Image (cartoon, rainbow, N blue to C red):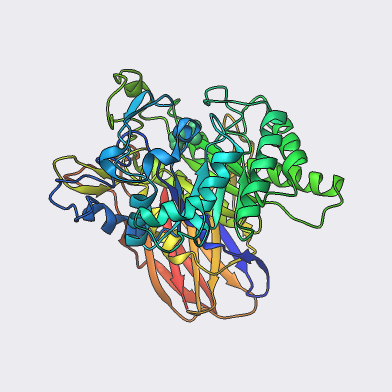
Length: 496
Ligand code: AHR
């Protein structure tokens, strides 16, 4: 099988906003407690944060982390998580029917974020709460001093403002499962007014409005039109959430799921632009794909979990090799739409549908999906080049024409590197040629691939078998490349 990618340095999709490599930590399951925070664990630092987890998170080079939820957010009182720990209340978390001890809150999370050299994408509760609590939180976090909430922050040990730039107006407010679920009109008005008050406190912040919790929601489309109609002038981004799975065990169809993501993005862009046109607005709303991942392995297990525990094991999907391949396709899709997707959060980061897992009594380890994310987040920095792709296609249950090849090229002008990411969805070796129109590739710096595993192979704490290796199956030809993509493979090719 043969395929071709043609690129030119002059034809660009967009510069990449690094926040596209964001992630997400929710107060649920073992994400916070026994995940990032576990005082008493041999690797814990003085503050109780696991350093083995910090090391793995750093490998992923994540510039932004959404916090503190998720469904948890819609019943959360942020004030419970500040002030002396011993005075913090233990609460019912109604979203996950667990117990929240509030040992970790705003200050602790901000400390952890500093340790991993990232930024917070803060979310305000618009489920059970409203404008007042939202504007107070902005004052607490971002106001210099001399007011009630900014002085409270100082008393709690943080002299300088946290300076949080990106804020989410609630979570999945279209979902009937959400605490304080609202109609689009109810939410649109609330978000508009909460956003207005928040920006009056600090006009440098950026706001994310809740879009649909999946493209398959019955209200999809109408929801976006209505909430944008209300809040367009206050907000900067509209959110998208989507999780994928392979419950029918249909590999060809599963690996095509990134086409679904593509359609979702294109649809939401069209809706944003239609509202822009209707309002004669000069402002463009961009997208925050602030929850995306694979989530289905843990569903059955989670039905048996007893309620009202602290940090119960929830949503602990164990990812296999086919999941890593799809994750690679999803990352490439986000890059292809980097002109409009400016924020994206892999949901989530530790233990809960996560690339990183921890053993309570043992070590932290990398799941299969860790690697494609690590490659793209570390090397997919710069400008996405417009790809012209020629590849054969196949048909599946849900998709008429699925290219065997999924690929994109990124130009890193600072390092003078071109980085190509590619997935071979097919079961045969693919001859992949890269043609350049206005520059010559001199050499390959690195060709890394993930291939040759059983499609259902997973990693465990003891054995991280599914991982990348180097390949030498390439040739630099006439300023271009001739590469052999292994059957069912994830690939990263860095060239000069
Ligand atoms: O990420 C897990 C959950 O998925 C989040 O809490 C919620 O926002 C979504 O439904």
